[in-house]
Length: 78
Image (cartoon, rainbow, N blue to C red):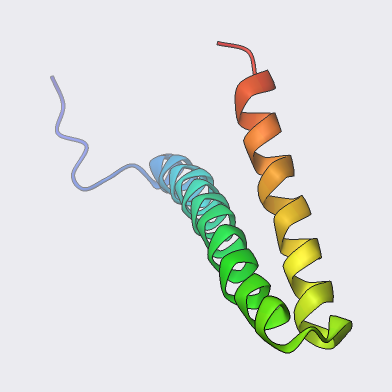
């Protein structure tokens, strides 16, 4: 079997694709955890202050985003 030397240049496209897919998954996971945390923190601020802007608005939007992520997790095909 001939020695091909180092990594074949075509493999770098595969490595780049794998890194892109992995980073997308990590970003999606962090975004979901961040939405839940932000909803909790801003929800507490809204509850304590009673002011809708900005705490109530951000809490509501974050809660909707966390719910969207949760629903999409349960609806994806297995």
